[in-house]
Length: 131
Image 1 (cartoon, rainbow, N blue to C red):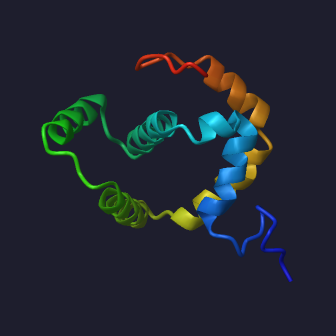
Image 2 (cartoon, rainbow, N blue to C red):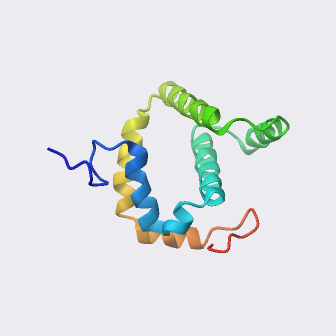
């Protein structure tokens, strides 16, 4: 029987299994820094859109559209991200759960490389004191 206290246990929700990796890779403070996590999410979502064929011009138009509107509710927007990601995966013929599980397994083996890559990233916002 799988150990539900083990962060790698498949019985734990995906989010609960990601949290220990983020802390191991970046430390608790950066793992829980809302601005850092927000910037990394934006970067990854743009990389996905680019991989699916979006252009920089399209991304800039969407940024202007979104930031020209009222700020949404975080919980509702998370739901929207999840539904939209599932729909994108369906349209692209991809399995989002399989991709997530595969990535989580892979990144545990690449912590040093991920830290090195992060150290070389440019700053697009005021530099975080831990960056």
